[in-house]
Length: 438
Image (cartoon, rainbow, N blue to C red):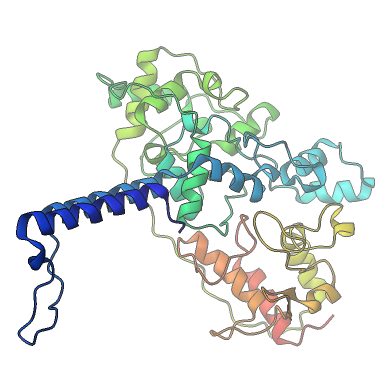
């Protein structure tokens, strides 16, 4: 972590206070007492004033580190290419051939220039990265400390959205800087905004106004939506997909921000798919009180699936390619000519990751492996400490990430997308064990 000028000044101030206290109160001799043998004894404990100054310096330094630096955060948002998925980053949108979401939206809408057969095949499997939340007005909606924590430990926030936030290669200081940048223009609201609000009335309003049409609220039993809509209707699909599970709302938002958002989301974030449901300010406060304060049952414990034994039947590359590589892996690991783009972050680099040159679009590309930090080619089939091939270890690590047990040594794959099921991993592992037949 880089040293900060504020920390240096505070430490210097604390050191000066310690010196003054030692000499002024006890005399210069007391600063370094002699042992019986004539040498200097162990340093005496700091005087109370010195200890207090040092503690204050440490506390302020910790607060500064958590607060983050918006200027550095802005640079990180650009370096990490957040605009490849998100609007509202303050950066220009990425070019279409590097914009993951825009590309998929164009395919779904028939705007992508490609052969009709390819378009038909792509649309049959196009379930991911069609919707992604905009980061606009993040400071008026989200707590800075929550953004920081979410960047460091992403989890499934939107149960009806196929993709999740990827686990980026960043540390606590960088997460603080990004959170500071995204919340730099926050408008403060009165903290007593929910005074007099009723969570019981809020529950009744929540159900009467059909909030459960889009939102899950895990941990609260018996909620219903009285005005259900078809989730796949064009005008509601994005709203349903992007609606977060409201059990996280109390961590993500201040109560006053939540009430303002419920009342008129478009006034805070223009263009949001969250509809403005007719209600009074008092009703919005009641709903906010219900969402922010109602008792929640503990979340169900998550666990990764058990590994399946190797298959005894013959497994070929053609089958693995059809069921695994072609479905998901090629999005990030392919040659630019094949991907009609830049080859993906797993090949030519992106999202803050180095180019690894891993091409999973062909048998020869997989056999060529990836490029390590020293620029050397390495095999994705090399076995790690647990005996699993590197490729399999990455797939299993993604299952562990979804269960809340991220491995700092292995980044789970596919990045930011649902983990492969046990049968798909079994297929890949069996193919490798059989010598990778074509």
